[in-house]
Image (cartoon, rainbow, N blue to C red; front, side, top):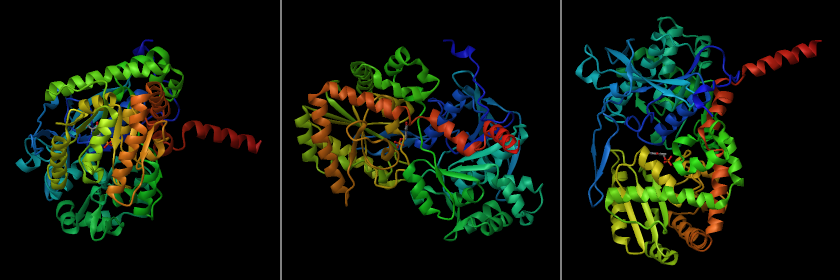
Length: 589
Ligand SMILES: *Cc1c(COP(=O)(O)O)cnc(C)c1O
C-alpha cells in the first residue's frame, strides 16, 4: 500500500465548508515540544492525530508555553526540583502574520500565532495555532503571559484564559478561518463564548444581548468536561473577574448564572453557552450530571491514538496479519484470531527495550523474566501512588512467591502541590526500604511522552489505584491495552467499561478504606496475577491477546473522534439530512 497516494474518502458527515476549532490549554503535539503537563494534553494531541488520520476538517488553538512544562529532577531521597524547559518555536512551527488584540485588566495585549502542521497518515493536515504574546509593544508582564503552563497564580491563569479563549476566536477570524463548531476541551477555554457573544453584538454593549444572541453562540459551541475533582474546575473571585475581565462582562456572566458560591466557574460558563456537553467515561458523565444537575451532559469515552502508543514489534505483528487496523482501529478486534505466542514475542522485545532504558537511566540491571508492574501518572494525591506500600511485608511475601517482582514508578507532581511532592518522597523512601534481591522498586525521573510509551508497552501489568470517583477516565491503561498489557486497577473511570475479570485484567475491589483496597490489591496479585504469570505462559499470552482485541479496538481516538463528529460536532450529518428529505418525499407521494 502507498499511504500517501490514497485520498481520504469523503464521509459526508462533514459540511463541504468550515472547520471545527478545537481549543485546549495543553496539547502534546510532538515529543520535543514541552507544551503539555499530563493526561489532558496527551488526550488533546491524540484527538488531533486521529482527526488528521480521518481527514476531519479541524484546526486547534492552544498557548505557546515558551518556557515549557517543567523538567523533573529527583534526588536520592525523592525530593523533586523543577527546571524550565525553554524551546524554540521556530524549530517546529512557522509564524503567522496575523495579529489580534485582547483586553486584559485595562491593557491592550497583542497576540500572534505560530502554526504547527499536524499531518495524518493520508496527508490531511490539522493546523495547530500556538498563541504567543511575546511581542514588542506588549509590557514585560504581558510578554510572559504565554510562557508557563499551569504556572503563576489565579490572576495569571485568568489572563491566560483571556488570551486562549478570546484571542483564539479573534485569531481564527483574522486568519479567515470559517468555523462551524467551537470545541472547548475543558473549561480553560470557556471565555471563547464571550468573544463570540461580543462578535454577535457587533461591538455593542453586552448588556444588550438578547436570548436569541445567546442562542446563536450556543449553536456553535460544544464542551468536554474532564474532571470530577472540584479543584480541577477553574474558579475566580468576583473581584478578580471585575478587575481582569471588566465590570460589564462580569455583570453579564453573573446574570447568565456562571457564578456558583460567589465564584466565576469556568465549567458553568462553558455549560451555559454550549449546545452539547460531555464527560469522558460513562461514570464520569454520571458524576458530572450530579455536579451540574441543571444541564444535559452526555458521554464520549476517551481513547488513545493507536500507532502513537503501540510498540514497534506489536505494530509489525498487526501489519503482517491485519493491515486494515491502521485505517480502521475496529479491526484490532480481529487480533483475537492471531497465534498467542506472537504476543509474547512482541511483548518480550518491548520489555527488553524498556529495561535497557531503565538500565541507562539508573544503572540498574533488571531481569526480563521477572514479573514487572508499572505505575506512572501525574502525582495527584487521589491517585494514591503509595497504596502498594500499605503493608510492605505482604509485598515482600508476594515477591517471594512470584520468584521475584519488579515495580517501576514515574510521575511529576505540580510544582505547587506540596502533598503530591511529599507522596513522591514517600514512594522513593519506601522503595529503598523494601527493595531486596527479590523485590526491585525503581522511581524513574521526568515522566513524559517517550517514557510513558516505553512503560505502557514494556511492563507486564499496568497498575492504577485512584480513589473513586475521582479518575474521570485515565488513559495510560488504554496505552497498555494497545500493547496487550492487562491492567490491575480500581473500578473507576474507563476501567469500569474496560475490565473483564481475568480476560482484560483484574479489578481491585472497592473497600471502606485505603487499607481494605490495598488488601484487595495484594490478594489479586497473590491469587490471580502471580500464579498466572508464573505457572501458565500460554494462558498469560491468551490474556494479552484478549486485552488487545477487546480493549485496543474500542479505547482508541479513531473511534472517539468519530463519536465526536456524529454526536457533538455534526449530529445531523448531511447523509441523514439527505435520507430525511428522501423519506419525506416518499411519505408525501
Ligand atoms: C498517558 C499519559 C498521562 C495520563 O495518564 P493517566 O492514566 O490518565 O493518568 C500522563 N502523562 C503522560 C506523560 C502520559 O503519557
